[in-house]
Length: 460
Ligand SMILES: Cc1cc2nc3c(=O)[nH]c(=O)nc-3n(C[C@H](O)[C@H](O)[C@H](O)COP(=O)(O)OP(=O)(O)OC[C@H]3O[C@@H](n4cnc5c(N)ncnc54)[C@H](O)[C@@H]3O)c2cc1C
Image (cartoon, rainbow, N blue to C red):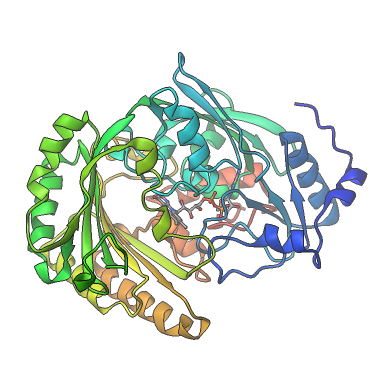
């Protein structure tokens, strides 16, 4: 691809502080994030990205990269950086015969699902349609297809990357294989991915969705049954227990509004008839506020939780732990935390992992060892700035208490907290791959130009 943008032309295209367009472009999903890049370049091509990187280097500015802007810590927006806004790079091309999709670096999962489901195919993405493909993929990617097809990175075949020198290179199993390995779990440390090549899987258009909503007064018993069911069928079902508060919605009897509950959400990775049989034992385990189980189009499933996570509405702090096993004690603690959470807008979850996720060998990707079976995540959300310390403090304390259960102190870097990043946290999170990543960082980004991420400092 030719590098057509002259540095002098860049100056005329930059958004600078003081304009409404600048403020709109620097806004991200979590409204707590209020960072001010030195300038913003809206990129519409790989050549724009290359020119932007070279311009930033010439100015002595670090580079931040915004794709979907969903990162709760706000890593997309770097204070004093040149921010590359990739929202003009959302193209998706599907080759149904070869079962691959080429996805540009600023695409959202809704873009991918629309293009791939037109052919009855899917890339394993996340649970929310307006999350960016890039950020989610580069740190792993956990969604409904994981038992069948693994994490999103397990389906990455190649990436086109603009490096810290402004070069556009291909990384795959044959060319720049170290970089390709690093991109599969090492986050946005190594360059700007302008295009991903993903493997596609036949899935949908209709799938079975399990969603009984148990009242918290049902206690932990149904969750223990769920745990045992996932141990038996985790290679065929992706599931999570979502602890929530029942909203004032016509979908629920007003008698339940405001009560704490948990959704037992699950998607079997087989045809809907078989899926219905697989989830049947989960649907009548205690007192329920509702049951939203049924057949659903995969594209609609991918948007089903969007309304619970509106962009820019709630102030947010998210943390997580990977767990090797899920004991009764952990279930009791997760339920007690859900009851004690100071905000009705918060969610917390227990996620199962099995099948294709855990089949990947430890060294195969930078994500590291797959010897965990579960994840506990705390997604706290609240409305008022005055509640920041109270809700964040409570969440941090609950996460700290739970840490004794964490498997090798690991956590999911896409749910890692904020303002607490450190090389130690990142080292703990990655299952034994940090040193190799630091060596690869030293090759591709020795000056740490790309530092607005869970940073891996270049090895000396
Ligand atoms: C509502 C919500 C739901 C979520 N659900 C899930 C889920 O189901 N499963 C899951 O796994 N995660 C989930 N996440 C977490 C999500 O994966 C991370 O927040 C991820 O960082 C978002 O990607 P993004 O592209 O929107 O991020 P951004 O905020 O745009 O960027 C995040 C990081 O990636 C870097 N980056 C962005 N684009 C590029 C690029 N093209 N090349 C190199 N680096 C880049 C940025 O510099 C930054 O460091 C969810 C988050 C939210 C807010």
